Image (cartoon, rainbow, N blue to C red; front, side, top):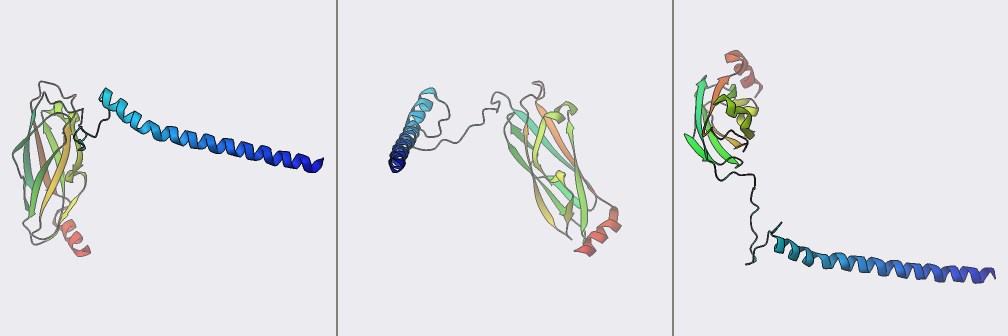
Length: 191
């Protein structure tokens, strides 16, 4: 009788195993079948559609950009030290929420290494909290070798919450030497 109970247990285990395998296959098939259904529903509703009717892939659109507004960002650079420092363009027009890149150029006119920092300022002052820099040379000190020229990008966007009456923003950088000639000489000696 004891051997008979073991055999019944094996049959029961196999039956449960077969049922579990069938359930797993059915679940996989159901999930696999949902993909085209999901695509059809999204296309019908116009949400999360990356593939266009002609088969090309559409670039995602930043829906936070306010295309109804344009803000002119005027660029300025002031040099306080042994270099030439200037923006490579005078201004750029951007829509609030749109990512933009501008470039500043600096040339160390000395035959020595210098260490410098850029400090930004904004006009009008009310624009400052709405001017969002993603990448900027002003985030860190710059070490420029003798007679080195460098182009440095500023990647930014203007928060759409910028007051509507602000149509122009001036972004100005003052580029100045840190620590004077003695500190710059020490930097040169470390290299």
